[in-house]
Image 1 (cartoon, rainbow, N blue to C red):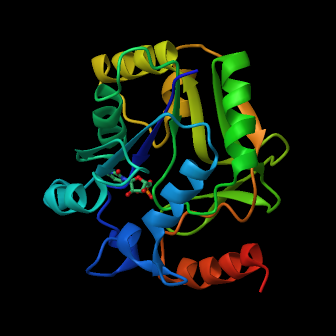
Image 2: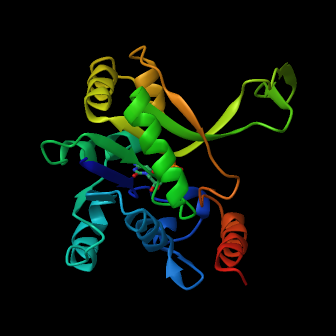
Length: 228
Ligand code: C5P
């Protein structure tokens, strides 16, 4: 089976307030992006890995990665996350059957998550990793006043990997762009096609390194996995 992985890592990391985009920062002495790529390659299932980076970093990242066995191609990202993933998608080789999309800044993806979500996507067409909401959720207006307590039964927090059959993701992108729709994940584009998207249970450790405090959490999770 031809399984491609697209790794969007073209964000500027504005919320990290660091001059270096967060995907290039170190965790336990290694760049976050390298940890993510090693985890994907370590799953043994990915046959084609496309890394999507900020246009300004393209040449430097190509020099660093193109000789490596982990990465097949490096392409430039776009303005929004969806544009970056679509740029990666358009570079996929013919005959790709399954596409894994995984954030470059989620280094704690496990082999189990990858295998379970690929298997679910083979069966259903689309599968995304998520965890159930355990906090009480409120809808709040612009003045900070609560408008509603949202029923949390059936609410899930979505992560990546998100995995799709190639043809479904292709149709999802085409529909989204023809209607100028932008989603914050690829699952939402597939939902708009009316196709089923299967949830695969994720992990609270599969965090997205977004803010400065996530680096501290990340160091702890890394130590947990390394058993020290
Ligand atoms: O912005 P967000 O937290 O949703 O970013 C998730 C992932 O998408 C990150 O790995 C980030 O680098 C990537 N991204 C991208 N292109 C953008 C914006 C974000 O590849 N224009």
